[in-house]
Length: 428
Image (cartoon, rainbow, N blue to C red; front, side, top):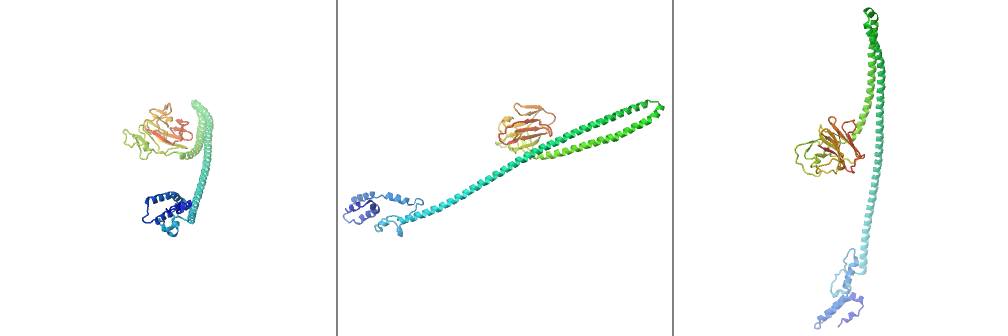
């Protein structure tokens, strides 16, 4: 047959012309000499020699970035017709591949420039953010130093004021004692003179009438004159002494009032949190008072509410600083108050102990109780009106006062709050 010519060609020529040559066999067939099996076997053999898959992979790798579909030059469509010739079946030309590759490179270069610009913008934002954060840290450090310095000066000022006021009170005490001694000395002398006059006048009264007329008038005049002088001199002197002492005491008292007003700014405004109140506790409308009721109310069950113990907390918690507030107990005979950690269990019966997160004292009948372990008790003296609770978070102290100006009734030392918020605590 005529197929032997194709097998004598080199391998590159087979790759380029194999398709066209296979088609040329069909064009040379004549009617009457067609042998289907022989021609098909020969065609199959030639197709195996052609690396069609390799050509397809090569086309796919021409542009992996965009997977472009190339069009043949001249605008023709690829077809299996023998009239298109072998060049039409060959695929994209080298020039076109280079041109397409150049376009892809330019596109990639453009995208790369945009990415670099975006990176620069993000880097500038990062640097700017770091600078602003550093500026804020610097400002906070400056403010921290200011606060430390101001409070150091405030403590020094308060200490100086305390020393000044105490020194003035001590000076006033000494002045009172000195003047008291002076007055006692003067009055002792005057009392001695009066005793002498009284004795003389009593003797005159014992004289007979003739003698009384000679001595009594002059002695009586001396006694009346002395009494008149004593009333004028001693009374005036004592009045001036008392007025001066009272004036000096008022000055010290006014200074103390100013200091108390300044310190009063640290007083905490406590309101009650009804969401924590036991169902038997009724919180007032302004959330400033609470009372116990016989019947429990139908309240929603929440994780914050105490379900067994008749307790509730204040709305505001404290995690630093010094704070104090006063509670009027309204002549109650059973109550407790203090502070509690935010992690205090709300369900079940509570144990009032610092180890359980409660620092409190209260009254039970005729005894006060500080809820330590074991419990500390001391007698009740008089009716309890107001109780002051003073919290020093940093110092780990909770102090209770029963009256202003009186020493504390009890102090919890070295209280460990664990960094948690602590809230005003009440049991009714």
